[in-house]
Length: 261
Image 1 (tube, one colour):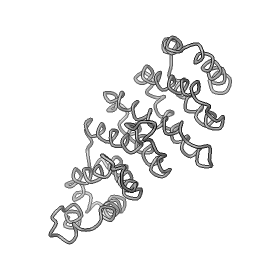
Image 2 (cartoon, one colour):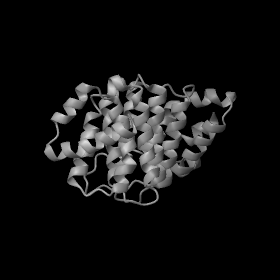
Image 3 (cartoon, one colour):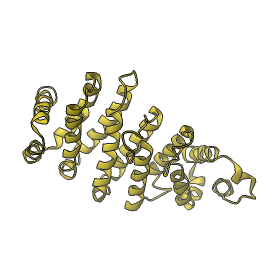
Image 4 (cartoon, one colour):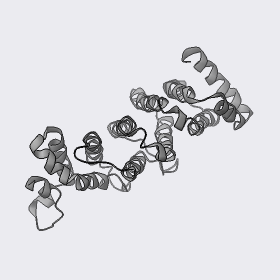
């Protein structure tokens, strides 16, 4: 108990509180991973404080200074451990919303195209795995937060759309595909919301000279989104497209029917 209290201490006169935030995050993560039944109760009594410490590094992010990759990465991992440990922290709907907002901040969903910078692979993967854990562990609890989840998915997809065609491309896009696959089981709730994702992808294809390798890497994700649609949403999607986008979408839909459906 004393060790946990010291790691969470904000008393400036306490030598432990002057440990770097990165060190404190790593030690707390170690306690969550290696803790036994004896430490579980102590961790639970401080679960809310550990949660708040993890969030502090994620939102807001000071993008005028060096991108603190290690600190952000450890914070994301700490969130994943808390999501898995319901014995340490019981997350409310508000907590889930805050987590998604922070992940959106890390990915850069609020930034303009000019401000957007590539998210380091390890941090991007960590954010996607955290979102996947939320869907797996809190699927129905997320239903009131669907618009927020879709907003984060837009950020994830936009990050993938602006990648360079290098060796890490598939590592990024495969995480987005796993996220889209996880939502198929909840299609009744998400189907009308993913129309915007498909439309944005198609518009991007129409406006930009996207390399084929990026398009091909993202198509499995789009196929999963198309799996959710009924005839009604497909007609709605078609009505929202201009002539050039319809032509592009027709090609995507034909490949979906041939290779995936």
